[in-house]
Length: 229
Image 1 (tube, rainbow, N blue to C red):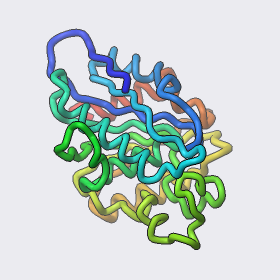
Image 2: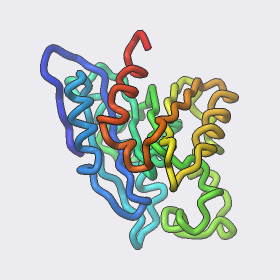
Image 3: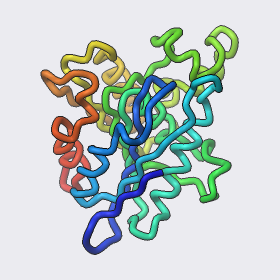
């Protein structure tokens, strides 16, 4: 985990950033620019790594890692105890599972007390694994026909009712050639139906990879996170 602490008096709200990479690749450096921007805006940022699905199934290990980062962010001396998860692409999928967690994940964490995320910011996220086919098989280690319950447990769309106190901002790139807008709108509808407020924002002209760029999404995210927002 890479932790950045803003200047000035605290405590301050915490963010956990979760990188993309198609579940099989990527490092926290991919979210480095956004982490530095958000730290400059007054947030404690925890830019976390997680178990990649390259030869070993990433579920539930990757979600355990993000849940542990949420616990560390909440209990950091500079944190006010509130935590928002900011995930991009595959990281938005993993981050959504951690945000909806009831305390299931992160059991091996050095911070033993479970922490529930307050907010989720999903950037270009695919939230329904049933639509992803072979692309996400490495994450589970088996196809859905072999372990359908595992795939349901790792599908944010099917877990939408587990944290009704969660508020979510789901950002979609208007020119995203990889992830359809339906992923965001369907997930938002499921969250809302479960009593969890969710907002979908489309960034017109943006491409998929643009949504990890603070010049594209930074002020949108900070405006939504602001207490008066």
